[in-house]
Image (cartoon, rainbow, N blue to C red; front, top):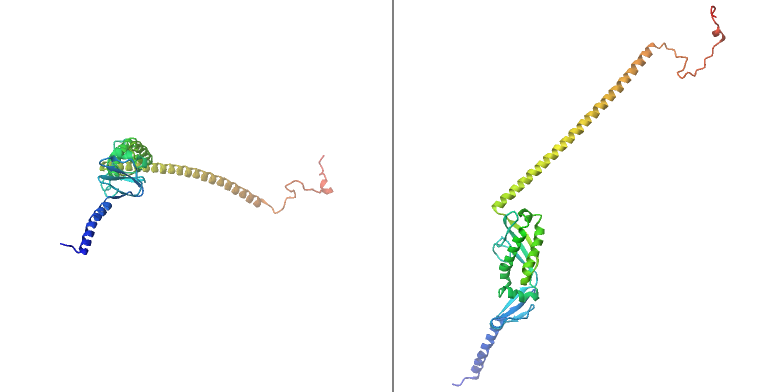
Amino acid sequence: MKLRPSTKIKLGLIALSIPLAAFGVWFFSSLRWIPAGYVGVIYSASRGLEDKVYNPQAIHLGWFQQLYTYPTMVRNAVYTQDAGAGEVKVADGILVTTSDNANTTFDISVLYRVMPEDVPLVFRTYGAIPIEDIQSQHIRRAVRDGASAVGSKFDVFGLMGENRIEASEALTRELRGRLKSKGITVERAMILGAHASADFAQRINSRVNSYTSLQISQLQNQIAEINRQTSVVEAEAQQKSKAIAAGGTVDKALEFLNLDLMEQAIAKWDGKLSPLPKDGKQTIVISGGGLVIPSGGN
């Protein structure tokens, strides 16, 4: 049976489209992207890990090849008891035993990255698992062990309050020592909030009540001291007031005595002024008759 030319063309197009479609499926299915802020390595089942580290780009993978990416940008691993927070939606807070034997769950955040030159080391250390699994399993285990080592140097109240920054810096140094040899570079670790148990909440209430009682006692002592100082000031004021009143009474008595003497002098006055001034400087003129000596005198 002889085929018409149009039929031959159609059959040719169909035959050509089959390999093209197969190539298209392979092309897009084997295409992988290394996003910005990441680097990648290719692992082959037959040849193992390639030595080359790939920068952000699109890569076509061959048969039985797998691309693994690692963050060179800073990545935040949050281990929290809040199941709705963090990259892993599960309660994965870190249980810390402090110096006062208190077991308390803390939220901890770790900023980390993988340097490009450390990518082969990370792969040899953790194997062919994605960075998300490394973070949720291996880095978390290092954080748990490091937090227990650091927490043993502080009591639970210090770790929750005034010593938190110091403890966070100590945890950063601890994690750098534990993870750098495995290819993980820790930028910073931070101890966040605490999730208190019922026993620990009771200890907090007891501590708060003791502190409140101490504050009340101190205030009462201050009030007593102020009252004592006030009593001293009042006593001194009363003493000075009595002294002033006594001095005023003496002055008043002398004034009345002078007035009484003046009244008596006025009552005895005959209305004539004394010819002799009080200063004794008056000149007295005596006439000749005034000098006659009476008879019988010598």
